Image (cartoon, rainbow, N blue to C red; front, side, top):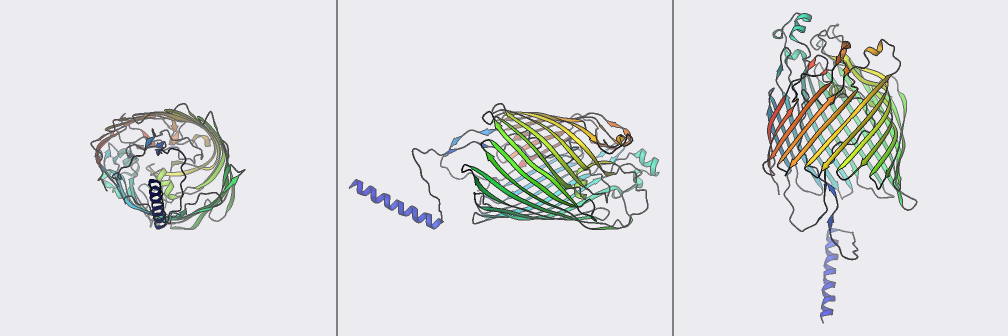
Length: 583
């Protein structure tokens, strides 16, 4: 009777399970042999405070704005790994789906950062992000150095039947800065005026950028299945002196996985992109302070385009990985009246050695990137309106070595040699008498880059990092006279030392030192070696409330990123972070 009862109970439970699966439309089946212990495998935990970078005083290395090789060095910081843990049945934990960060610093520097998103949902996610950082201070003999950035982003995504993901985001950003790179004595000597005689609106640049991004991708990654993704980006930049740039970017890819030799897998891709720009410049006789030539006439340009096709195949044999493809590009951006066909290689091979402790890779790639008005002003905020635009072409031979000496210590080394055409740099524009406005300079050169970094991670308590680069340029097609000005704002080397300490998840400390080698400025002057010391301390009162103190340029040096533009000295921002728990 006991055996019959057992069979009846098993039959009833099986019937209920089948009905539950039919109601939830599950079609998975599980076969368990032997004992089963659910275990979470190793995962990477992200545990770091949000960082705010001040563009005036923080000595970040902004000079590597050249088109970088695709195989650049791996990030110096790698989060500690969480040890395996058993799954235990417990209710869902509280989510922190909001984030508020407020602060204020010297030089009248307010900071605000707000983030909010929807709570746990398998089908949809939506939210908003707002940020603001500005400075309203001044530098002796240079007057006000007002600058700031304010942005807001709305985002969302929706998954249809676990197969198709739809996403979109809408962003608006407002930037402003002053062309403050002239002293009181220079203003009086050149223009015969004092600060009281001019208005800040005469040399203040404002930028407004609106961007809408929308796309879809299917979530099919299986063998013998076709996957695809499509993305449309519309952006409109309108700025001071009636400068306008409209960008339409349409990109997408299709991929297909296929088996190889019964035990290997390959994936074939076809990526395509159209990047188009329309420009309008109508200054109506107005230009930044100090402009010398006659009034500028209106300039309206039609579409300037770059079209790319990139077919390639990825496949693996044991620990040997191959990436084989080409990039075909049509350049109608540099010269909008003519279209030039470009061909770029896209091949790479990598191998893991010593039980995956060592990874070696070698690649030969290339590409074509547009230097449009929006990208120019991001690299150099003191760029002249209606600046010349070209597309940079690059061919890169890259070798990379990663050595994981232990779970706590990893080293990387890289060497690359690049052939660059219309490589971007800057020089002061002689059309501005105050020598405070830059224009782009496009050059052909070959660049050798040697880089290395090492990182030590002791669980989550201590992280030490050190790294640097050496650069050597060889300019082509230039005489001796040209060599005196082509090396503008190109450092010979850079280095970074950094440490992060997490004490019981209560106190977080960050300290870093940055070094930037000598480089040549305008008028033949040489900018000396610069060093920056930055630190941040955060105290977590509880899971919802924390306090922070951010300190930049603790060396209190008045260094120069760009000639005639001295930086502020030490910057201190004190603030708090608050999150509200949600069910």
